[in-house]
Length: 114
Image (cartoon, rainbow, N blue to C red; front, side, top):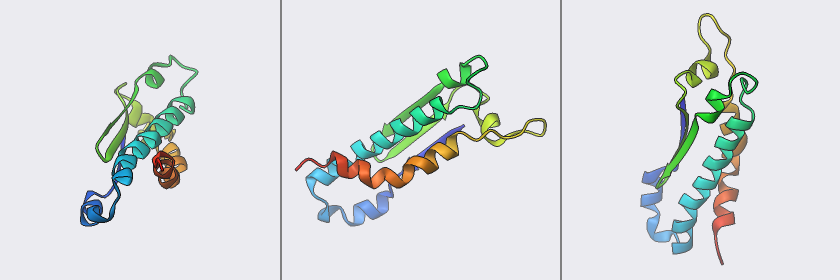
C-alpha cells in the first residue's frame, strides 16, 4: 500500500519567478512535515496494532523534491486498506491523508523564515 502527495510541478514551474527563495525552500520542508505527520498517524491508528505489530513497523516514508510517499513494506498493508473478498477493509492510510492534507499550507507557512 502506498499513498503519494505531490505538489503540482507544472503550476510551480509556471509561477517559479514569482516565488521567493524562502518559499522555494519552505515548500519541500512543509511537504516533509506533512508526510511525517501522515506516517505517524498511519502507525498510531493502524487497525491491527494489537496483532504482531509487523505492519506498523513496516510503515516507511520518503520525500523527494515536491513528492512525498507513505507506504507499507509488509506485503499486506494494501489488503488491510482496501480489503479482500474474504476480509473487510480497515482503512488507515486514506483517513490519515484526509486529516493532514488540508494543513499542507500551514506546514509550508510554518517553514517560512522571515
